[in-house]
Image (cartoon, rainbow, N blue to C red; front, side, top):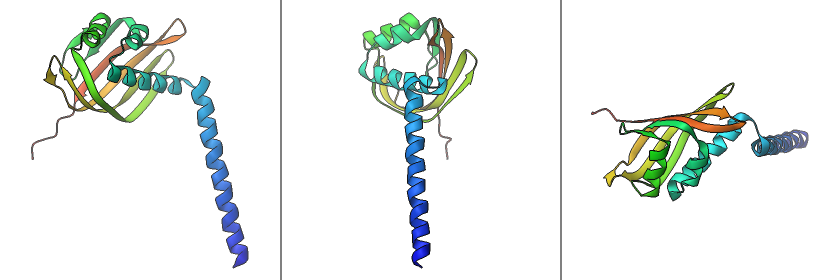
Length: 158
């Protein structure tokens, strides 16, 4: 009985050490990180910038020929995206992201996920759930957002 308990304690101690080591490895990758970590970092910074209405993130990280298609079907370029945030045309109160995934293909990466958004566009309520894809291209050694597409998730009528 005591021997069994000692074995279980040893197994628990080793699994805790393994979990700690995996967590430390993930943190070290995020610092210099793999491409997936770099893209997720940009995704998180973009979310924070959108919530704050901070245009500097978009000025620095959108490609010059960026094009976005909003969940309302509006097509916007880099300048319009920045202007909409500067003048308050696009305002976010909350952006909760889930199901986030990053796929990398050479100098291109796709970030996908679900966003539960609370906000307004030109005073119109755009609160809802959206699926999105953001396309990143590596330019001059730096990842830039080339394209964005959002689609509103509509629940079927019951």
